[in-house]
Image (cartoon, rainbow, N blue to C red):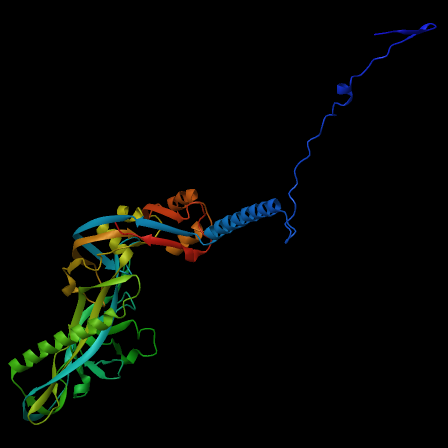
Length: 430
């Protein structure tokens, strides 16, 4: 390169070739731009992106609504198997009168109904007669420990006002005091003060007899008479002549029909919690009264009193099934299928006296069950709104009456609904 010298400085000059002089400067890449649609003025790419976003939002809303709906309209279905204890009953048992039974003992109660029945039989008219009724009574003294003397002819009255007289003088012993007071008593005969059928009185419809002279005193209700036999024979009118066999047959039919009719009435009066078995009845009948009718017929009439012996179910179950079996249910209630079908035979029912109740002995045979009662509505209320995993704790609290329990949810991710109508509990007997 040539150097030009001018005094003390040197100037270097660099020549640039044309090729270098005309070389293009580096270029920046410019992005391509899609022109808007001539008709709509919208760019194609922007529209596509908008629809993608809208689609995602819609999917999200549908999924959320579906989840909420599935939870709100969820259903819960449970199956519960109650605890069941089979019991084979076979044995002899004793029931005590309710008023005197010891605590915890099987005690019975009595329902009493009275009735009258009559029928017509062939007869002929006999002589005209007038007779007074008579019968035996027991006089009781619960007034004093000293004896009481009553002379023959002493008047006694029933609740109807009919007067009867002692046939002989008697001395009633004084009462004895022990664990309980035992009245003194004596058997004697009374005769109606006047003739007539209205003085006839049967044990089946009897009322106590009270001494007229004692009325208004403290002795009146403590010295009294009670029928030992029917008071019969009172009659005024034409005596009917009948065939004894016809009377006996008609009387037997009347007794059977009247006893059954009154027993059915007793069944309708059994209170809740008690049970009445067919053999648990004691019937008392009057002697037949033959009267009335026409010249060729007579009316046979009898009175009856039927006593139904009822037993409390819970006490009966504890007796025949055993208290230990019943205690397995704790404080929870239980049912007793088969209890009504047990065969009970009352061995001393013929000795039953309503005025002097005593122990009743019976044999029981058959099969029954003790079955836990499931409180469905109560369990539903406790299950409402809880997760499925917590249900077992709820069911465990009912362990004394539940053998097993299972459940499922629709859909499976939901909680148990709070709406009780969407909770189903099926009790499945084992």
